[in-house]
Structure formats: structure tokens, C-alpha cells
Length: 457
Image (cartoon, rainbow, N blue to C red):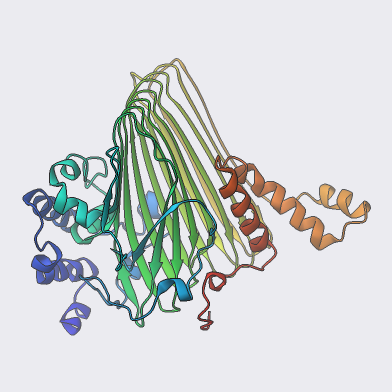
């Protein structure tokens, strides 16, 4: 089968893979999942991969990466050792409920697959939630993340078998954060696709931390989708920490649907990764909804990161804020493509977008494209982007006070990054992220810091 796949074009390879493993992928699933998968694979076949000339992907051509040779697994892998003995997450010591997703499958061999609390809150394996609560999951899964002209959402919807499901019913509060650890571990190059679904009812609230890690030095390609549904007056904080090695490629797709007076903050901190493409779509569908999107990436060597955001204001009196910052060293490259779309009925909109970047070398590159598309007349909207170097006058001032040049550079870089970090709302998490960023800027943090296996980077 592998030789046959290698002889095909990229799109045909995945179509053949789905056709070969269709029954195994959807084994035991309800009809709504089978229908959703079939719709997704048809959408993928029709749209294919984004071309190099596609404006939204002009700085990150992903098809060649998906054409590489990978192993594919459609059942959970059995491991013979305790993950906790060889892995330490970058944000330990938090009072959180830790959920592990290993190579795309929920992993808790000695415990629950799906936890259901007395107050109605449910969390755990998405696969198990589909089995036990098909009506609940079917009401939300695939309803927000569009298949139309969305190659990577379609591919994920067709192939993803597991991930995390979180449901917080009306008037309920998740007492402690959910910490999701996506962990990649294999003795071969591997492609992984997992799916997360977060649903908050009216007046509900929750905090979620997502950590992306690699535990072995092989090549990984991850294509993930996270769907978020926030009902009226709900509050959700999501922070994603990306720390994978330089031989990895990660594509994330986050879709947020917000109702009236809901509040959602989504933060992405990228410390390491070979090639990273982060897609964020937020739709404010109810009056008074608010979205805050934060991003900070720190790149060196030949690392590449591309952030795409689309914030859609469909209702009046909604607020969105985007703050994205990057620090690029060596020959690293970055891109930011952010759009604010204000619909005709979305009067009294307040939408702000800022992308600021620092290049530490002459060989680092950053491309920024902020966009506004406004069809309402009573709005307050702004956007802007800067790409520059460290302030030499500020460096001179610090050095004149007896601070060595290298330390002065670090102080300025940290102050630049702190504008994003300081917006993290959880105090314990803010302190830990602050320390990680400081170590990363000093060159003291690698993707191997969380692993005690000491394999070559």
C-alpha cells in the first residue's frame, strides 16, 4: 500500500488512504459522523491543497510537506512505559485537570475515558463522547469549522478519530483549568490529526491550556482542528503553548463561534517549531460579544511561523482586539495575515489589530499584511504593522547605566514580549509563561527541556 501511495499525487494519495481505511477510521461511529466524513473528503477532493499563488498561503506552501513519506496510525498506540517517567510539561505545578492526547488519541490507560461530573460538566475523549453522547456532540461538531475552501479542516474532519471534548452546561463554572497535552512519540516519521470540541452553555465559564510537545526527534506533521462554541454571556480563556522540535510541522485551525455578550480570549505562545501555520477564525454572532486574540512567537535558526486570523463582526456592539508580536533571529522567517470583516448590520463595532515584529539579524525576514473590510459606517476600527530592529537609543541608555550590551538587548526583547504576556489572565500561568519566554530569549530553552530521554535534537 505504501508503494502505491508514493506513486500518487498529493491529493490522490490522501483520497486513496481514506478509501483504504474508511471502515477502520469510522468503526462503530453513528451515522452523523459517517456523513460528516464523507462530506469532508468530497470537499477535500474538490478543493485540493492551496496553490503557491494562493494569497492566504503565499508565504507558506504546505503541499510539499504533506507529500512527504509518513506513517499513519488509525488505532491508539500501545506504549510499554509510563509517560510521566520521561516527560515533563513546560507548565507543571498548575492546579489543573491534565488530559493527555498521545499521537492523536486520548491516553489514560489506568483511568477514565470520559468524566461526567454531577453538575453536568463533561470532559475527556472526543471519541468516547461521540459514542456515549452522539446527540450532544452531533449538535456542535462540524457546525462551526467550515469545509468550504478549507483544505486542512476538510482533511482533519475526514481523518481525525479522537481528541478532547469539553462541555460546560448553562450556569456552570469549571472550577480548575483543563490542561490538554498534545504529545508526539514515535520511532518513525508520522502524521497526526486530532480534533478538539469545546462547548460552553449560557453563563458558563472555563479555562483551557493546550500544550504541544514532541518527545522523539523524528519528523512529525500535525493537522489539528479546535472548534469552540460560546453561548450567551459565557466566558472562555484558551492559551496554546507550542514547543515542538525543528523537524516538526504543525498546522492548527481554531474556529470560535460567539453568541450575545460572550467573552473569549485566545492566546498562542510559540517557543519552538520547525514550520508552524496557525489559523484563527472568530465569528461574533451576537450583540455585545468580545474576542481577544493574542500571539507571541520567538524564532531562530531556520524556523518559520505563519499566523492567519479572520475576525468576523456580524452583529452590533461587538469588540475584537488582536495583538500579535514576533522576535526573529538568525535566518528565521515569519508571516502575519490578519483580517477584520465588519458586516453591514454590525454597527457600533470596535475592532483593533496590531502586529509588531523585531528582526535581530539582517537575514531574518517578516511579512505582515493587516486588512480591514468594513461594510458598516458607525464603527471604530484600526490596524497596523511594524517590522524593525531593537532601539539603539534605548540600548545606549541602558549601557550608559552600566548594563552590559547583551543584557540590555535581553531586557528590551523581554519588554517587547511582555506586552502580550501581561495580558494572560491566570496569575500562576502568567508567571510560568513569563519564565519560559525569558529562558527562550536567553537561549536556555529547547524543545528537549521537557524530556529526560536526552536523545539528539
